[in-house]
Image (cartoon, rainbow, N blue to C red; front, side):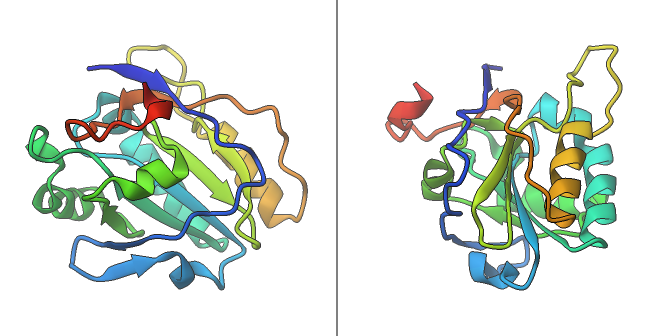
Length: 192
């Protein structure tokens, strides 16, 4: 397991467009969320210990904030040939078992991960109503094996600020997790 941190895409960056299949084969794109006051894009996968560690708490937090108006989408960009646990079939199983209330999309060509400069799982990107990046980084300070409880505090502060029309603090910590599993020869320069 290679561990890495977020690239920390420049704040104010416009949300790159996407059109990817969810676990039922429906194409989901950026415009599907245009009515929402904020959009959270989570790069994640099934097999990563960092994702598994926060998964239950993350799913509950997403339910709470979706009810407040936050649109949420999860994206898996991993190479499923070498990591079959992240296959679309296994993604569908995870959606059911974990009780996802948000779409979980498969980025087969890994182009969306590159557009967002995603580097690890989980990697969180929060956009305001104009779809400008206002937060990128960690959910909180917890990590597998640490004694720090999972609170979602960093992400909560950012989502609360956007929903209240306040500026999100630029004091943001990178997410940490497994590196995105790039297909051979497809790893972008920024991830090297």
